[in-house]
Length: 293
Image (cartoon, rainbow, N blue to C red; front, side):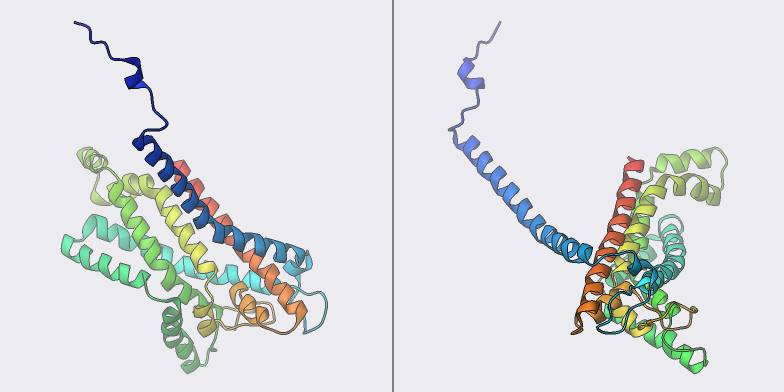
């Protein structure tokens, strides 16, 4: 028996209430998306406009100039930022990955639940609190040992505190997403727990781990408050891990509020370089995610 439906019942009516509601909600969604992107585009366009006009090759190779003096750059701040972010990554990535492996593979559910809760709290701690903590642990200890005071190591330690919860959480979630069938198949072939984690689980979760690490590095690159308490600032090239060290974020903070035009121009150029550094790390994170897919 064949059912015959009228052709009009299969045609979408542009005047029906359902179609009108769907069109209205689509327009609202596009407007909300545009409003969400508007502040980001406004900030990026303004920084690019102001920073690009102040950009030159000398900013990468020279030291900050004296007030009202033309030329100069912030090569020491770029090098100091890379140095302190590198120290922070060296400290936080191994600890974060190992802690996530312990939570996922070896700990009990009760211990893992409390550690994850503590990690969520740490991720919400203001960055200035991390700076004060690093000041008490590193800076004051260096003063007591007569090894210095403000230093690149103290700044890297403060950044490591901020990077640790992001790395731990992303690695933990990545390891949990690895199929249990892979673990069971590895054990069934005679592999030990250590071999299973090192040769099966970690390689499967590696793209997500790289993504979390690069996002943590991107966040740490733009932090200012912790470095004010630990690394302070310097107008010279970094001379050691236990000496005051310049950074792009602190340079922008110091120069942007100064009354000197040449310092303000360098602050805009440094802002552009800082944004580009964060953009590059974000692109790396997206590329790692794409490789996983």
